Amino acid sequence: MRLLLIAAVPLALLTACAGTATQRAEQRSADARAADLDAGGTRYGDGATKAGAARDCVPTINIRSTRVRGDRVIDFEMAGGKVLRNVLPSACPSLGFEQRFAYKTSTSQLCSVDIITVLHSSGVGRGASCGLGPFQPIDRPAN
Image (cartoon, rainbow, N blue to C red):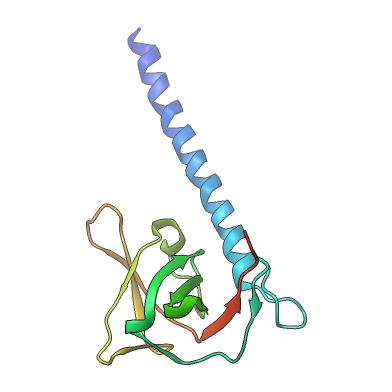
């Protein structure tokens, strides 16, 4: 009986790790679709389209919510319903997995030169710190 229990523990751990790897692969795929533009440079792979000129800064008071779409993509939902997509210049480790981040600014605006920091859901420590990109207005497809 003892041998069976010892064999079951590694199997359970292997199954848990496989699930995590699958989730991360799916997240990377969703992240790539949200970050990649078509050949014309107007439509993202997830169906969202550019809706005007990108901006370098947004007033923090107008940010209503955020949706992390992966390690490189954050959609900022603004007052009035407008959505601004921020594609980070490079992947921010664990951002897509944790789905949480913090930022600190010295002004009342969040800008493409600012840094976000991934927050761990365990509450222990902070994750990677990564730079933002420009804020691109988008129209999202109806879900």
